[in-house]
Image 1 (cartoon, helix red, strand yellow):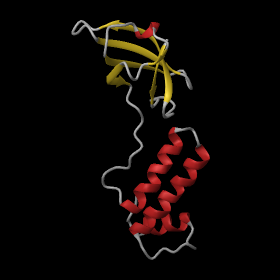
Image 2 (cartoon, one colour; image 1 turned 60 degrees about the vertical axis):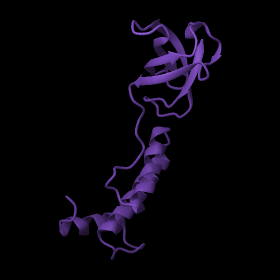
Image 3 (cartoon, helix red, strand yellow; image 1 turned 135 degrees about the vertical axis):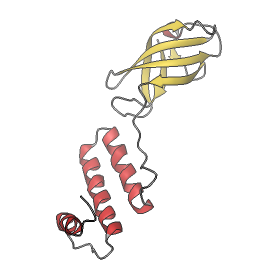
Image 4 (cartoon, rainbow, N blue to C red; image 1 turned 30 degrees about the vertical axis):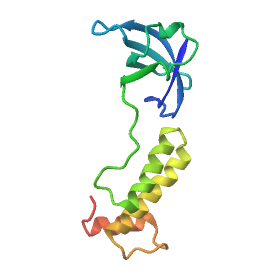
Length: 149
């Protein structure tokens, strides 16, 4: 069975090996294929639309298909880890770290970075907060000032 390295849309693992279990020719072009693959980590499935560089059956191929196929589309989409465009830079970097930790199933790291995201966001909203101010106190003060809901 041919394999491809992809980011899994189910477990969020990066460079996960996906075994191509089934494929069929597209009616549009001889080298266009629809393929179904399964993640070696979580066993979640994906549907791929890909073009082959030569005519062969990816399910009968042994090894990495990346040199022999170009993926045009995949379903479902991989999880997004970037911060929203409106997020301040000071907050965005730790937000991205929290999302990446969550995507690789590291909940303790994700929780720590999510907390740091909130701490930085509260500081952006009110720069008078210092390192000694507890997060819950910051949130209460911001809510009382109607800066957050």
